[in-house]
Each structure stands twice: as structure tokens, then as C-alpha cells.
Amino acid sequence: MVAIGLACALVIGVTLGMLGGGGSILTVPTFVMVLGYDPKLAIAMSLPVVGATSLVGAVGHWRAGNVELRSALPFGAAAMLGAFLGARGSTLLSGRAQLLILGTVMIASSLSMLRSARGPAAASTADAPVAPLSLRLAVGGAVGVLTGVIGIGGGFLFVPALVVLARVPMRQAVGTSLAVITMNAAAGFAGQPSFAGIPWSFVIGFTGVAMVGIGIGTWVGRFVDQRTLKRAFAVFLLLVAALVLWQNRGRL
Image (cartoon, rainbow, N blue to C red; front, side):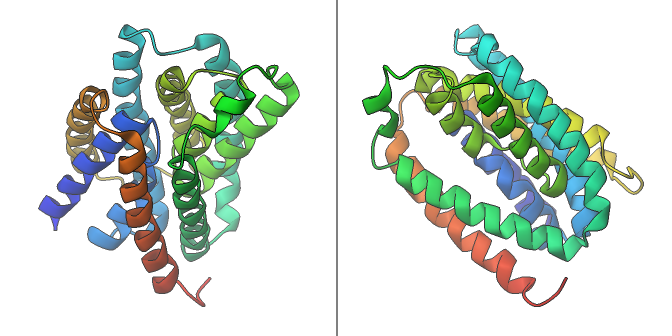
């Protein structure tokens, strides 16, 4: 099972590197369904994995000139506040309820990927003005809350938000999203009600494999058709979401 879990870590990293988001949403299901960890512990474990892996990817994109700090900072600041508050508020939910929310978000993520894979939907609005700061902060804060509650990075929401609301070009949106996810995950982890029981040696090893994956994904992403990749990953994500919801049906 550990070997399968580490293979999932590699997939998570590769997907993050290629798409700037989406892959990290598999971290909690991997910890719970493959490795058998308690849901709340799995959420706490996922955040350092997501944050550290995204940081490696963000550095790679920064060197390539694909991180737009002027857009990353407002989204990131709002997301950090939301993530911290979401983590604190997660004590009001059972682990099963958090997994049901996660499954629902995974379905939304897969549908978003399928929609974006049809073509560059934002191209027709390329000349539109940047959205008001208040709207960008609200979106960043909302995604941050989800991070704190269910342990996701939020890249599948940050990438389109950066493109549509901040008018960041798609290639830069991927790198900028990774920078925001790093900030988001750090705040979500800081807000976790308890760090007891986290198997740090395993988390470090899992993170190391994911970091290798994100380096591979960042390089390969320059040569692979992202539309095809998004379609395939979205279908896979939909299947995992269905399994998460099925296993937790009727139990809160």
C-alpha cells in the first residue's frame, strides 16, 4: 500500500507541474482510501505536502518568468486568511462531513477541467478590464476556506480566477497559481486544531516523491497537449470523487 501511495504522490506532483492545480486534490483521498489514515489527520497531513510541492513548482515557474506577483499577492493574502479561519472552523465538522464536501468539490473540479479543455474560453474576453479588487479578494478568501476545511490547494479554482479576474495569461496563471497555493496551504496548516499523530517521516517522503513529480510535470508540460491531459485527468478525478461520496454516503 505504501508503494501505491508513493506512486500517487508522483501523479500528484506531475499533475501540479503540468496544470498548476488539480493534482493536490488527490492527496487526501490517497491518505484516506489507499493508506487508511483518519480523515482529519489526512487533511492535516495533506497541507504540508501540497504547500511544499507547490513551492518547488512555483520556483521553477519563477525562473521561467511565469509568476505574476502583482496578481499572486492579493489572491494569496485573502486565501491565507480564509484557509486559517477554515481550518479553525473545521472542528465543527466530522471527518465524514469533510470527505463529503471534498467529494463534491472534486466533482466541481473535474467538470471545470472538462469545460476548460474544450478551448481557451477566456480568449474572447482578453481585452476585458481587471476585476475589482474586492471580487478578487472574495474569491481568494473563499478558496482559502476550502483549503482549511478539506485540505486542497485550490489550483483548479485559482488558475481560471487569475485568467478571468486578473487577466493573467494562461502560462503565467499556472505558475502564479502554484505560488498562491503555497501561501494558502501554509496558512491552512497553521490553522489546524491539532498536529498530534502526524507521521512526519512518511509525510516528508511522500512530499519528496511529489516534488520529483512536479519537476517532471513542469518540464513535460511544455510538450504535452494540455486539453487532452485535462480531459483524461478530469474523468479520473470524477471516478475518485464518486468513490469518496459512495464510501461516505449517509454518514456524518
